[in-house]
Length: 158
Image (tube, rainbow, N blue to C red):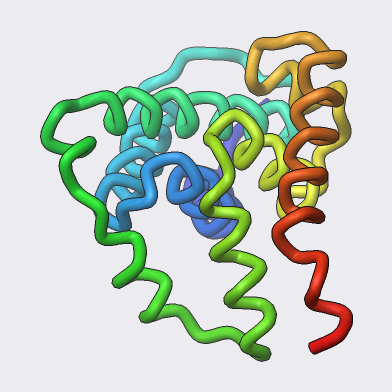
């Protein structure tokens, strides 16, 4: 498959950034992870079957880069995602509250929630992207949903 690199960048960079930010919680680190993924794609000699294959590959590379960045000592000592959340514009205040609760989830639940609901991947596709079993993805979705439900239970009344 021939690649139109600019088109692929325009189409997926925002989604990759959202996935990376979900892990790093740092704007610059998420941007670096996305940049790293596109540099690897540009230099890749891999034969991709389809554009969906490219997207899944980019997500996997971005997620791995974000996890690597997060493990660095100086990154663990920062916590400015609150500043970034304040800079985002939401249609309703409840959207911001929901995003804040999703970002508070432990990483293993947060990333599957993001891929399932925001990227609209199926469980099987998420398992392939994260290199884990479908049952693990289902379990993480179930637990992530339960955590969110417990935290958001009183919202219907507000």
